[in-house]
Length: 177
Image (cartoon, rainbow, N blue to C red; front, side, top):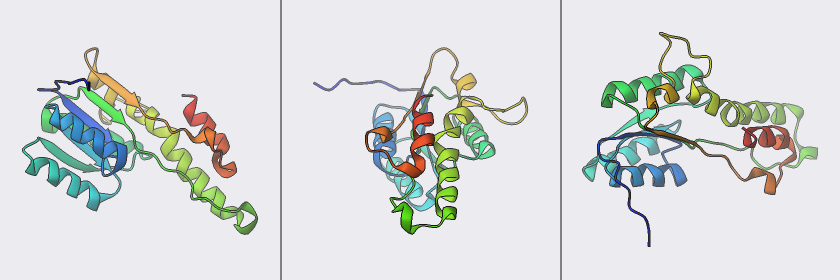
């Protein structure tokens, strides 16, 4: 038997919401009555996912957001609170990985660029959503807006079971948060 949830009157923010687990989570929150803020860097599928939810009668908005950018994260949270008046649930799911490559065939710049991008998303997104360096007047971090009645969930990947040498160090560090 699957459990049923009632999120009527609550607001959920889901990152990585244009596909996969993020989209499925946004749909589940909406079907359980929550107003949903779908956030993703991929604008076209994000708009399509949001349009599908609103066409089905759910409250949902799309916010294009690169979770590795602290200012965009703060603006996303600000938009959620401004639109719906509160933030009760944060499902921090967005993530990326470096493309598979044979280290012998790639220049050092390939790994440096991907290493920094993966690290920016996987290491910094939980920090930014939790409040990061956000100062008063610079936006609203998620956790203080959620308060004592809500939940924040940070999703990590099972990267270390199939290590990828160019990102192993940052992968291990991001999973240890």
